[in-house]
Length: 289
Image 1 (cartoon, helix red, strand yellow):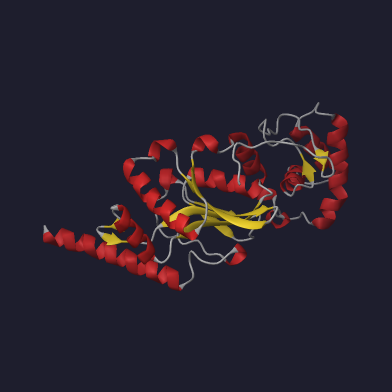
Image 2: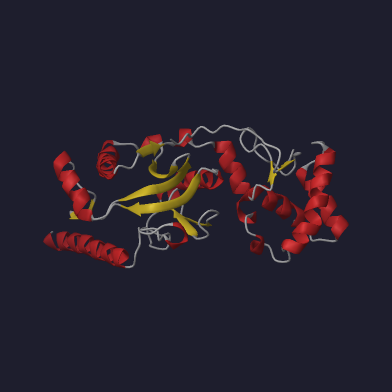
């Protein structure tokens, strides 16, 4: 019996030592492209609901690591928001002594592995642009069904930690993530960077995009996205799918605009687009102070 207890104790010590090494390597610290998530998708962590995602950041130009479907969806929302200027996922609450102290004050058992305290993390530290400068805000993303008593206890340690730091903290559930917007951003996602599609560069983009734009605008929402893009592919002698990628790229970089909020984009249906100097007003279900 004691042999099993020793194994569990060793596991806790091993994880604590591993986290100490993460800190030495700068994980959970920094900002922008230099930030290193404390927990990364290759750390053999069991992902919530089986999701482990690496995403090339639009704002940070680095790889983002999300560990659940809800984190991934919220990341896409953050990428689209013009107010959010930096996204730091799997942010570490350091030093561990601080969260241990808070847990003792609250009478709450600290996050641990087999009794050994481990470094706590929160899902997202966001930097937002305001009229008076930039501010940080902490967001933890959790489905309502997972907000059990133990989870809420750990969240209270988080909340107190960031309150003492003077940083706003909040929980966001799946009900607050705009499903249509997220689905549309996901559809655009891989086309953000031209180098993800061999054979398409700025020169070709400049040559083809104006023709494609004029065709879609002239069509006035009568023909499907696929038909418009295939017609332009054929006209320029491009491989099928090239102009669809160009359309996605122009939308992802907000050089063209469409309503991202009220209807999911489908390739077998029409799309209405506008140039960047025509304003589209849309509202989101998430509001940042």
